[in-house]
Image 1 (tube, rainbow, N blue to C red):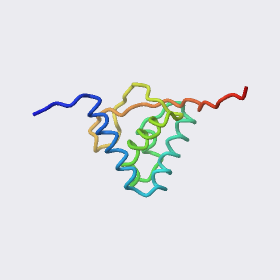
Image 2: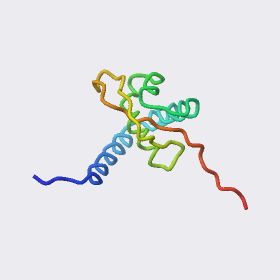
Image 3: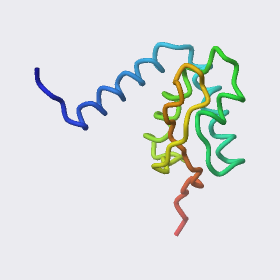
Length: 110
């Protein structure tokens, strides 16, 4: 049995999440991203626990992939490196990441 590196595992995870996003209705993904960004702007920091309360249950499976997508776009969210226990019963309290709102950079005109 061969072992994979952390980078290889991350690449597989990211590809799986992107595949999930690509296979769902675009407006559902957009809705989840909009709610995440609105919550982050309002609160400064946000996790899946915060967003789950704001979305219909059928959209909950898109929260993780949406966070992943938003942080890989060099967008207005960054992972703080902190984790909090999940409030979703299905996760049995495993940790979820906390993300921080970072004001998007705009290039200043010279």
